Length: 180
Image (cartoon, rainbow, N blue to C red; front, side):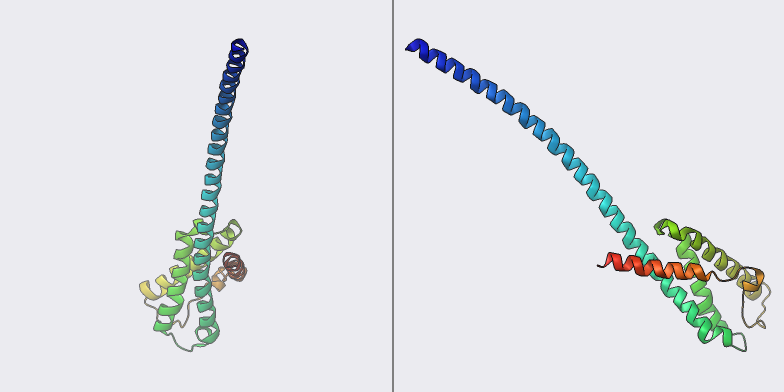
């Protein structure tokens, strides 16, 4: 009986050892897979967070451009195109400030713009660059205060209305996506 007991105990020890070795390898394999999954999950989470931050910054940028474009539109509809004499306060505080602000926003934050707006942003920047240059030349250098308004459309730099529409539409679209 002792021989049988020895065989049973011996085979049990071998079986337990074999089971422990297999369990150890499965455990290590599971740990490796879990580490890989954790890295992939963290990479996806980081990418999603980066994309969310970019969208949030883009909506903020587009919102500022939207407000200033509306400010300009209202200024032209309500007063600027109807004034009889040069109004330095109106031109300096509304037209000049909004033109410069939009241009500076687009130049300094172009990396937040969606690719489909880059060409339109370039058109807006070009228009505002030309207007600001003409303003500087007319009001600062020549000290011409007899011209009631500064327009660059007749010089070949009409305001890019399609750009305005695209910027406003994109703002509304991205704002709604961000806040749903």
